[in-house]
Amino acid sequence: MIDLRSDTVTLPTPAMRRAMAEAEVGDDVYGEDPTVNRLEAMAAERLGKEAGLFVVSGTMANLVSILTHCGRGDEIIIGHQSHTFLYEAGGSASLGGIHHYAIPNQPDGTLRLEDIEAAIRPDNVHFARSRLVCLENTQNRCGGAVLSPEYTDAVCHLAHGHGLSVHLDGARIFNAAVALGVEVSELTRSVDAVGFCLSKGLSAPVGSVLCGSAGFIAETRRWRKAVGGGMRQCGVLAAAGIVALEEMVDRLAEDHENARLLAEGIADARGIAIDPSKVRTDIVILEVTSERVSAAQLVAALLERGIQMTAFGPTQIRAVTHYGITEVDIQTTVGAIREVMGGMG
Ligand code: TLP
Image 1: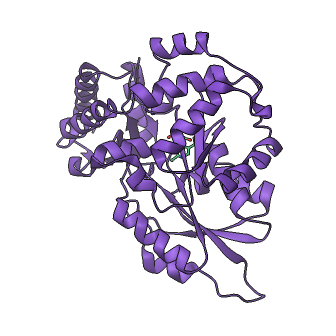
Image 2: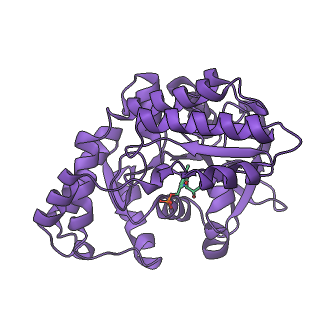
């Protein structure tokens, strides 16, 4: 199988498995797991923050950050295409009583500054309290779009000027840094909190790290416990995360190159629309324009040929490149799409 459904399907590397087997561990709820402590310190340093918190998933990183920033009846301003708004089971609303004010993501993944400003509510008894702006970099549903350091700074400047904080869902922030050729800390320098995933393109089996100020992270520990995320000897997992940070960041460029090759290879295929110049990272979203073939039908036809992708709605399909995908796999995939669409489209 050529599995392009997500970069979450990546398997741990041999170096990760060795590090996991040999990891020194302790009870992390007591703060006594040396491997977790090392990973948290390392992640915070890379992202230019004071402290880090190892959590189970990207969803938990977003959840405990939002729960820490906001109280009941507070409001977050968030893109309508963001993962937190669409795919996190409404956790901050059900667990924290937090209201979401969704504003449009532009096709390049940004939220317009004017839209953010217009969504910030005045202090009035009728309104929820605006507390937090949430960004996502890279922006998954906008095809792995990359937010620049300057844009991120501008959002933070605006939010902070109104007394709001900024949380960055940086599930794929290292993809953004590699695509832009900047230090990851440039993309996170002005946000109050940022979570990133070890278990996507970086290939660790489990985990994310949420980073921010020491005081903020101390508070997030309470929320992580409350949502059942206090793990014990989880240094066995953190050990793989350390390998991910040390060895798996620079190679993301290969995934980006493979994504670009895929987009270029199918750009002129019958019944497909895609602009390869918009493919900057590991995510390719293609549009099925043929009236005779739906996205679901193309996905099914590819599955019969041993290729897995995800239908992202009636006409869109997402393919994600990663550590398990080679250039030959991409050539095979391009050939299969052209063959299927040549016959059906
Ligand atoms: N995204 C998954 C699916 O849930 C869609 C994927 O395959 O891309 N933020 C962003 C931007 C994400 O893309 C994801 C996962 C998360 C957060 C949540 O991470 P996990 O799955 O670790 O909870």
